Amino acid sequence: MQKKSRSPVPLYEAIKRHVLDQIDSDRLKSGERIPSEHELTKLFKVSRMTVNRAIRELSVEGRVVRVAGVGSFVATPAQAHPLELRNIADDIRARGGHHDSRVVELSEVPLGSEAARTFDLPPGRSMFHSVIVHAENSLPVQLEERYVNPQAVPDYLSLDFTKTTASEYLAHVAPIQEVEHVVHAVIPPPRVRRLLKMPVGEPCLVLLRWVWARDSLASTARLYHPGSRYRLGGRFAPMAPSRGQLRLVGGTHVQAKTR
Amino acid sequence: MQKKSRSPVPLYEAIKRHVLDQIDSDRLKSGERIPSEHELTKLFKVSRMTVNRAIRELSVEGRVVRVAGVGSFVATPAQAHPLELRNIADDIRARGGHHDSRVVELSEVPLGSEAARTFDLPPGRSMFHSVIVHAENSLPVQLEERYVNPQAVPDYLSLDFTKTTASEYLAHVAPIQEVEHVVHAVIPPPRVRRLLKMPVGEPCLVLLRWVWARDSLASTARLYHPGSRYRLGGRFAPMAPSRGQLRLVGGTHVQAKTR
DNA sequence: TATACAGACCTGTATATACATGCTACCATG
DNA sequence: CATGGTAGCATGTATATACAGGTCTGTATA
Image 1 (cartoon, rainbow over the protein chains, first blue to last red):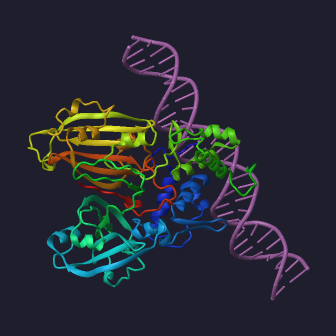
Image 2: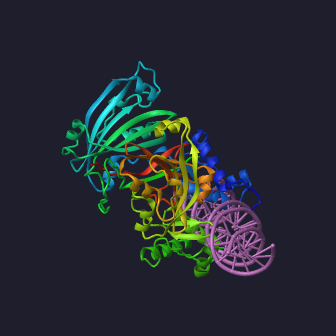
């Protein structure tokens, strides 16, 4: 019939957004029941199938939980944000490996003018700094050097990083808005090389990561990975790179969504 | 009406399984077209809506790729996408697909002051600009927007990009010294969306690439990839990001090499 | 008091239908 | 020979309807 919505945004999308708005603005709280399909049908003057699709997709996306015969409920933030920037611990566990980490450094450091500008903090303040080595089956696979905005995670220094990674903490304190990565490769500085137990001359893959939450930069991280030990599905035929060349073998799988 | 299927497994599930069986047993090969909704309707004697739901879910799960007006196709196994310097044509051929490209734009553009600084060229000069759509089995999979330093490739405008990609030319004129990537994801601007034949609202994975050769920046490129056609690890439950939020579901696997 | 049961309400599935829009292949016209 | 129109087919969205089955509550019954 297609009576309405000649606009480019489908009706079921509009309904999804409406419900998500309610959730994000806290008019619908965690665990609360959202309007039934019938109610939304009346509210939007659309057919139930259309509402059904909207809510079903929200359910697939983990924002609501549907219970036949009862209703649909706002998913708890934990369910809604199994948040990750896919942290290293998950990666390792997903491969069936054993993850453990060692905190090499955890401190408060004065904010240089450059860093102050990056974090948009007054120059007098300090920020948190941590260096953590992640190991898979006792083999170091990542050195995580991280700077954290104290406004984002005030109790960062008292966190226990043996059970939960910094990424996970970050994801929990506030919804992550944006992440940006820059990939490059370096011959690691000696300290990094030693901490990762790497042979001299072997390159590191470095991921620079910026994490934004609450409209400000929450954290930056520099993640060093031993070139030889880092993942590698193995089957990629080695190419002949030119001098200084960088290769992305694994690829990046990213899903992004805005609303 | 619910005429049939008193069994506990819904009809749309049965259809999904049927298609997945065909795929997993290689009766339907990667990139091949699966039966249209209409055909499946006749085959299973169900309504088109039921088939539509089955195929739509397979699409969400990353097993098939739907193209309005054309059909649905078996998604490439899409193990980690080798996004390195190897250009898209090689990638596609490596998967057994057919690559072709369409030059949307090829021109000489004046150099803005910002770009002049980036390319380290005198402000009066111009540089080359190209927009090329790469397709795998006729499905657009990458939009390559590239700026090329005229000092690096003076005859760029007269090159034939149907047989050789821009990446390949770049690699041939001078040994590549360094490459840097920035990965992020965006909702594509309308023009990009149309060229990639993407639905409204679907995100793009964007790779920004800088290529250095002969001690200068030879080229920059912005590579847009349709989020849905660009793999995304099937079984990662689609997540529900907050407003403007970006999420990395797959993680980044990178190997770097220098010599 | 405890149980059984009937409605009411909710989601789940399925159908038949309709119109919109994207794309392709082919054919007619210049 | 090129070019433009169109028919046909594919998916996308939306509706109205129907029935199935789960869950809850209140009421009637044993």
